[in-house]
Image 1: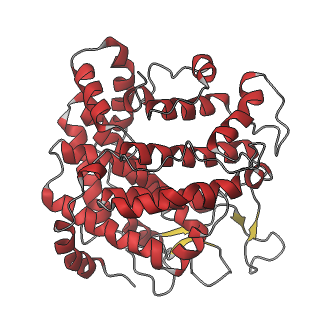
Image 2: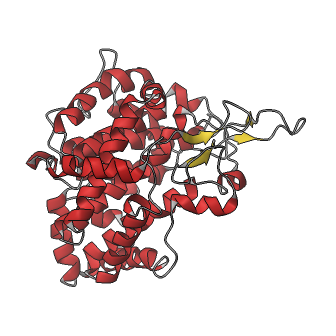
Length: 407
């Protein structure tokens, strides 16, 4: 079991010696130079950006003055497993419910039907709120220049990752457990819970380059993520998740690449990126561009977009870090590729074809596809899908106008 004080103390010196290389000092998902230009325009009174900055600040305002979230808050609810450290993260597996015929039996899966009430009793909502608060505060400060947002983001960062009394231990041994199965142990698919750390760390980079995150905190956070990345890539749960053939494998890769880049390990990020095409896309995408793993689920439209968004994240990470790989250009000999998958959606997005996969009430959302193509374009990809961009423009108040400016 991890003991965070001892672990971080040991690793602090290692963090100081691991200053990221120039190529990996990007804002991860976002182009740092582009964000700097947008910030200058926004703070200079550019009226075309005012709505997006205002909305971003409103999002950050919602949590100012509210209590900080901590993984240790669950101790008050008595939801610890036997022998579990309060600093250990614990979450309920999303689609599992009590057996209606036997209250003592292992819980059963109802795919597509999330157990929101059960989930809310554990740590995943707290983790997401903390990550969102850090991200939104950092972004609101970056674009508005108002110090209170950065102050709040740093306070939440310290509370969740660094403060001895409240910091999360850097593992997910109890993530997405299923009551009645494997004791209190988590499942490999629980590792997707920390996918929100990717955009959170992208925003943390802005606090760093803007001088709002003290060096001691930077070292401590890198020590935490170094320990967590080691757990992701060497633990039994991590190794099993790395072999997932659906969206989980892609989000696992996105986390490993992002965390490696944050730590300055460009070579590890590059080696993972080089395998995404043959290891992931070749199995996820059919020659016609469809995605059978996701289309077979009840909420097929949601999961297809969710999966493609992981690939788009990987493209953005790769391009902003200037890695010498090219996931957008990758294609199998029989035509499996990200471009083919996006083209497969076009009859539903542009031509009004009726959704015929999974539940009829959960089709592909055209605007969601439009956002993916916008992000790819901002990352320098010529998708050849400009019609989607023109049909589904990004709203004036959407933060994507700030984070992914398209020239």
